[in-house]
Length: 170
Image (cartoon, rainbow, N blue to C red; front, side, top):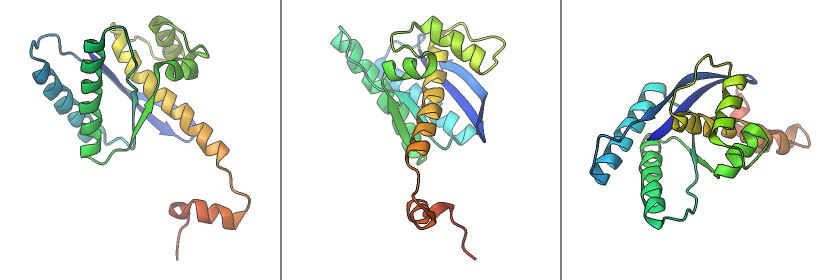
């Protein structure tokens, strides 16, 4: 299963738009699974038109074959976003957990509980893969806020030079 979560950011507030999983258990063929990931991710991108896509970066596990399959799955999900020119941001599992719970070693259940409270979600999906996807989105929101704060300008001229897209012309 591959989890996803979509957030709406309004000012400094984030709210949940959608959360779910792409269930691939009924497919035996790995290449068909990759096709379904691409198609479903592309559908989500076309339906919700996100500004950015955050994904959990591949991590090294004990099973090389599992890591290879995970990397391929992440690659086709990224390709679907890139196909529609959506910028991709990757975060390590530890960074995602740290940004949500304050503990890089937190369990999936702890992350889910924090997300439920943080976003005021009445009932979470039963699959923790869904909250994994949502956690990547929330992590990206938090990481983006940090970057905005640390890239301050030293004056109006510096601000204009660093942010030409935010300046209106007459």
